[in-house]
Length: 328
Image 1 (cartoon, rainbow, N blue to C red):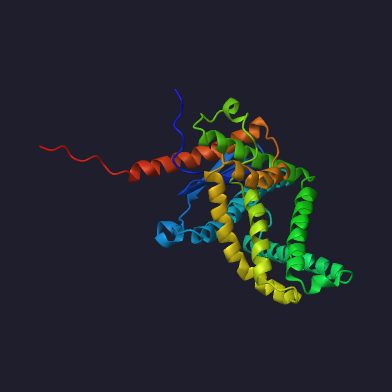
Image 2 (cartoon, helix red, strand yellow):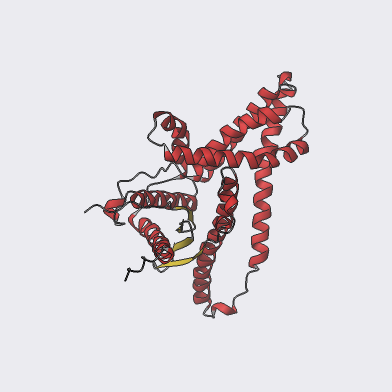
């Protein structure tokens, strides 16, 4: 008998030696430990859209979705990092023949703040200042770049994409990143099987693709296209570097909002020939950000998915209206 297809979407992301899955109301993080066991931590999403209906409106839902995805993603990475750190400390304590609590404690708040600050500085440097600098260097040879908003903004977007591509390609050679990309592939394969209503076992999941149209990588490609249009409309070529930063940051709001709506449409009409062309670059780019997972990595993804689906189904069952009382 065929399984029933899901009535709700599940998304996720790869974390350190694991996978985070999210349903509309819950999340679960599954991590492979040093002793080969799998630890699963879960909790409520507590989306603002459940409390305020206006966050479900088109455009606004994209802004909220991006914020909540980043927040949950950072939280999930922290969970996985802490579990890995716990294993490392246990091994270190074992070698030194002392208790784990006798080791020097980490300042997690300071490390988290420093990581967040570094990420912001790196993003500004790589994706605004560096493309801006390259454009200005080229403008010394082709002076029209300094005055033509079309050429300058096309250059900005093209260089942003090239830098992003080279960055992802470069880090893909690190072993830890390769494993992260394998878990990314495991996430996609498991979600495909879930969406098809298949039983979540290895033989059912293995044939599916590692590339998924709702992936964050596809979203990034869409934002590149939207940003090109908005930059040409709103940003003149004569802006100084600090003015460019101050102008681009507010434009992230409409870029994210519009990109989210296009991503939803591309998923809804994925069988449409035009949409297949539209989503092709995003799927192609996932050739870099995903790898074929092994059986153990798929097992971790399934543990995370099964947990979040169980929580969501229990929630739906609890919220379902009770049958009407029989008339006397």
